[in-house]
Image 1 (cartoon, chains in turn green, yellow):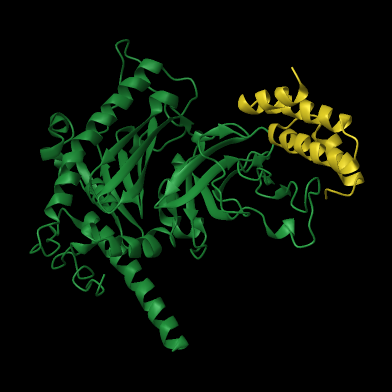
Image 2 (cartoon, rainbow over the protein chains, first blue to last red):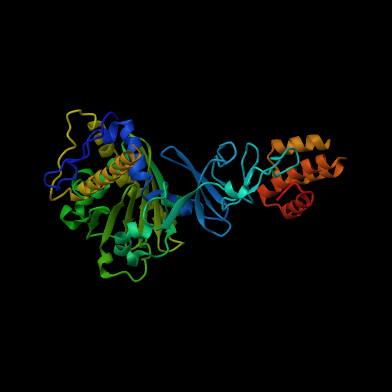
Length: 389
Length: 69
């Protein structure tokens, strides 16, 4: 990037603001900048704990080029480590597997505990000698990434500078307090992935607002009209939409998923869909919930990992399949929009677009958040530069 | 089959539990202390990896030999 993008118009009131400039969707240098200032220094979603259900389970995950792995340690705590041996930088975990004892580097066999401690360094002091006066194991633990688990999602703050998770996400945690119950992952019928040829932010933008529903999801028109939805907008934090007319899914025998316990009346027909910035999309209903974690592959490619949860461990497999298929259909209907907006961003005379003040506030809320975080980062860097010059 | 061939076969099939036993057998057969430590280290590392019940015993022997922490 030769020059910083101008974000002044993004931060105006929704009635006059423009969206983020094109470079935020099509420029590698802006993608790299966003990696540092809105993904690595915030609480970003990485994966879910259900992917490592048992002690010793491990899984490599690449997050914007950073090799990481998640593991459930011997004390049943899910941890995130940089997937790099402290010896010669070899990748430690190449595929999902169960660690029975120690994590052994496949190169020179340095071994780490599931808590990340370096426990043995074979032949490091010569053949048959596992110690060397210059190798202090206590200083060579695996690099652990700061993480937090909420609603089964593993959130990471890579640069370690964000305020505590509970503080940053306080308003959403409070909003969904009564939903803070044990979630049971739907297993193989509770997950799927979509690969989208679009910038990750476009998936967030599309998720936030209900404006597109009558056009992109016409199947909803019969019972969930535009006026049955409301905006959820918290500038500086999150945005999304709610529905007043959620209908529970039933199977051929009339069975439904069991409800979460002690919910208020609001949830009888209510549903809420919140984008927790930067990259996690959550959905909540009386009888199921889901989390979508957006993993950016490049500025124009994103993986959407979808996980669906229930209030009980043993719910009907056929009903779970029906629910998964239904959500998959809805999310697939959104793909052409995300990919279309990505293609549209190549229009060099596009100015970031305008927002409907009545209908697009959740989307503007997200753009405003992105712009504010980038501005904070740039200002911080300028201060450091001024001090060091 | 020679012990060497058994070890190679176990490496090839990634049978790490068997490697623990074979390397320990090798450690018991060699003459010098250094050779013994070498093979015992091999046994210990694979024991660590698979959570083998012999891992603590091998660790103790290596510590006593002054080659492990």
